[in-house]
Amino acid sequence: MRKIAVAMAKGGVGKTTTAVNLAFGLSQLGHRVLLVDCDTQGQTSKFLGVNPKYGLYEFVTGRDKNGEYISRKDIIHPTRKNLWLIAGGIGLVELKNWLGEQPRDIRQTVLGNALLPKKGTLDYLIFDCAPGWDVLSVNILMAVDEVLCPVALQGPSLEGLKTFFGYLLSAQKLNSDLQLKYILPTMFDTRTRQSFEILKQLQKMFKRQICDPIHYNVRLSEAPSQGKTIFEYRSQAIGAEGYRKLIRRVDGDDDRKQ
Ligand SMILES: Nc1ncnc2c1ncn2[C@@H]1O[C@H](COP(=O)(O)OP(=O)(O)O)[C@@H](O)[C@H]1O
Ligand SMILES: [Mg+2]
Image 1: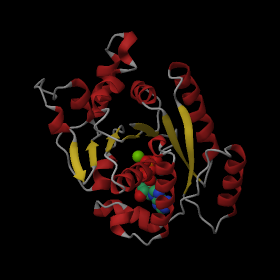
Image 2: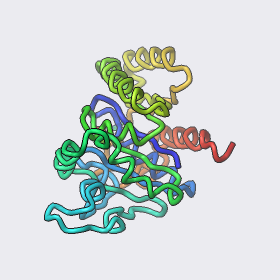
Image 3: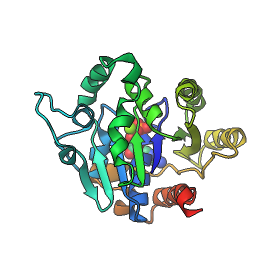
């Protein structure tokens, strides 16, 4: 099972867009994919057009807010063929409090351990992360081996990357398997010089990790309001083409094929 965190210290850079479209694309190739929404904003459900009753709080604690036992099969929400979701949302605030109350020696690995039984039944576990750094982010970086980092080709995006590297370094001290596997340039606007300049810098800095950029594409911003992935909404859009390339690359790195 491959475990990938889609993470970056900044919001609005395309993390959720990437996590959702990557997860869907891999599921379409026949892989069994579980997407985990780790953001209190809970956008992943909206992007997929679903409204699960339970989410990550119930999954990790095993109970609902009233203390009633909840079965995991009622929490893992089927969204498409081969694609399941554990929802995020405001309940994650309580999850973070709960994690903070766990004994120090197990606090950072609770999430990974809760997801361990999924080994063997799944091909991909993909985490859609929140921008900040807290007990939940640490848990995610303890639970994965690979990080995919979307970087917007606009604004002060390299600053966000620097902050994120700080997070990553602290996490790598605790999880030696953790590697920055992909840098995905997003919001590539061919009309602006800034886009090309940031892209060039990224290509120089991350020769191995750099992926083909995802263009700025209004279709990508419209798809979530229809509860659809870009492939279901406009499969010919340039945004769909970009994500198709990413999916091919991630799938091509699958050890099981080599
Ligand atoms: N390549 C893109 N072109 C145009 N709009 C995009 C693109 N990627 C994402 N968006 C839109 O930008 C906003 C932020 O994207 P999102 O994936 O939610 O970022 P994050 O999860 O990092 O906060 C959303 O409204 C999304 O639909
Ligand atoms: Mg998001």
